[in-house]
Length: 460
Image 1: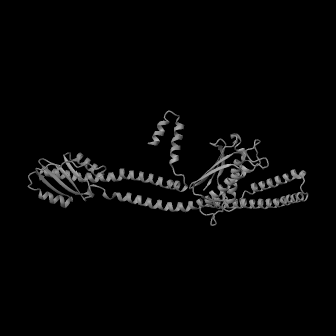
Image 2: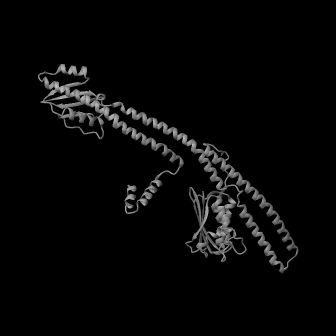
Image 3: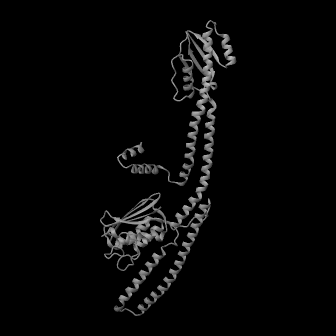
């Protein structure tokens, strides 16, 4: 009824709009998986073909054969009635009973003074009852009573004559194509065998696609791909699997080269900074060198931030982390700075993430609130599929028009709501990069506390 309600709501709208709504309603109720859709592609045509064949068979064969058999039986009964009325003086019609039983395969009896019993309830669907009733009415044209209900091998037919009743018992298969259902049984049975074979074949063809999707998803989350993954299945699936392996190898090789380069650069720059610090330490306490000391510390901080952003913690393996431990450390940091932080966890406390990267993600978002707000509320919800961590603070917030810009590397707001003046403008960029490396994302919005709401959502 829902589809008809949708059509009625669109009667006053353009036909194109109604068509789109109906197709959208149907699309939402169709399965989304490749295996289920492939089964529908196979099963639906088979069901349509079976329906058409069964209808044609019922209409053209079964009904025609039953009608001819019932017409033949009715003609024989009409002949018997003609004989009875032509020779009405027989005492018990014994010779007629013998001839009919020997030559026509029927058993008859003539019962004087009897009346027809009350009509029996008509079956909901009985081809034999409908056809035989039609033929007796057309050929004999007398009051009658028939019993076709049940699975008995005999049919009973009673015809009202002048002052007597003709009672006829005839085999059911003489008036009805009783074995025609074997055709439908064979058709349905064969279709079931074909569907089972198709299901097994499809499962074997779709399994490599699922393995490829799982390997790609694991690689997208920064996890190791299954060790037993290899291109399998049809040629197209093999080509896609091989292309994924080559792409993964190129990315991993590029990451290794970048890491090696950054390690070398980091070592060289840290060596120079160490020399600066050593020379400043040898210079002794000199107020004129305080600014230079601060500059060196800023360079050290910026260098660590750049390296952390470029490295992205991609080399870290996935492990189990307790959300409560991570949030307790953040809360302790708030307490040291005289700020208030409350948190709660709904669902399982254990999550599978890259521990150091996840701690950096939570720490960056929390420290951003700690700098510019007095109060922070953290709500972590761990469901079967997703881990969602929401940060609500009472700080000045970030204007809506620049919320996407603050995730860009090195972007800093003039009126600080990103990192403080000594930072690099990479805090939120690193946070989103870590979330996306886990297969999730970080979004910003308005907090009910009046400040900023940051939402982390990653697959559980």
